Length: 198
Image (cartoon, rainbow, N blue to C red; front, side):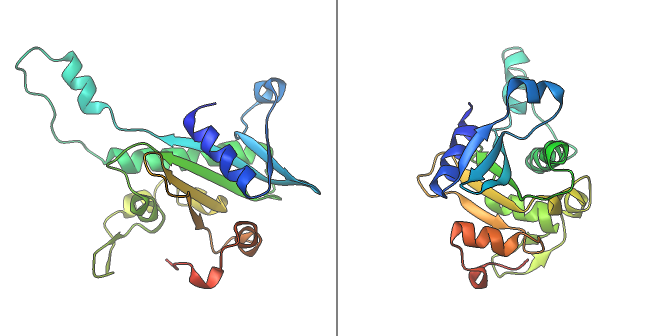
């Protein structure tokens, strides 16, 4: 198991669930998320773990350059947002393969190892907004929120964000339009009245 899968497993166990990996035979038949999680009365939810890794673009250019050669330059799109939308899009495909009628909650656990990537970047992927320090919303990321994850982002019922280098607990982000919203709030013992509404 990689670092994200280990963190997701700890999170599920902490909240009273029994995570179980899919068998090699099941994975050979098609896409699956990393875990299905059970409570005593049966299947409870599906969970996919993704690792948000540091962007190695500049490192690769430096390794391939001659001594003294200048490398770098302008990039067409932000790699952080591309990675986050890619993880969401891929996770939805994995969930739909085992939970096509969305009978159970889908949980995406994101372990972040990139110091340049923040929880607020995930929020911007959902909303398309950059939030100023005064709380104003500037709609500068709509190409991401309205792009390939426009439909996908609501198919995940709970996002969990954890910065690998910090000792803090993973941070949940609830999909408040999900039919499983209050169900998941109860699981995590999180008061929905205190949640930030986007």
